Image 1 (spheres, rainbow, N blue to C red):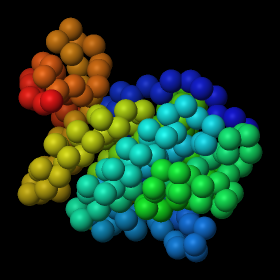
Image 2 (image 1 turned 180 degrees about the vertical axis):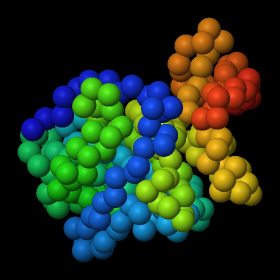
Image 3 (image 1 turned 45 degrees about the vertical axis):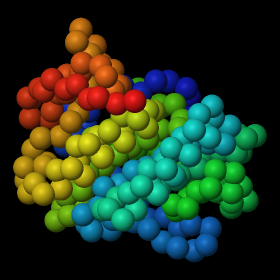
Length: 220
């Protein structure tokens, strides 16, 4: 069934403490991966839920591949979940192979993902639906992977990249307790409206512990 195209609310204060749904999936090559296993290794996990018919599929696939290439030596894991093909049928291994070939994907790709997608929609959306592609970023709690934190849920890889690279990877020297107690949960403009990361623009960062920070990043 086609996923209803309803925008996802990204106020992560509602979900930052929710128990992360676990999953074990196999690629078409037979390789097995588990959400909790990756989190227990201390790895941040990026998930790209997508369908081949979706507008934005190409950009999302290329952006997540770029992130994977730039962070694969760090403690980051990227996964692609393909829901449907271009005719709205359940994706199969041919579709996974085509997606990987078209966009040069080298991170693990899964099909037969209905149960996983629905469990994450149920956990992390208010209306029970989301647009695809849908990007999720989890920061790990290696000792209790189910308590790991969702710190980004949305459709903008620029914001996800900013949180991952400029916030988490740069604070890798912090203890797990400190890192978990202060996570970026939303970005506001100077009028207090929720926005995405933009270089050369005054922004207000709101953290999970209730603190805020004024940020101005110089970029191209």
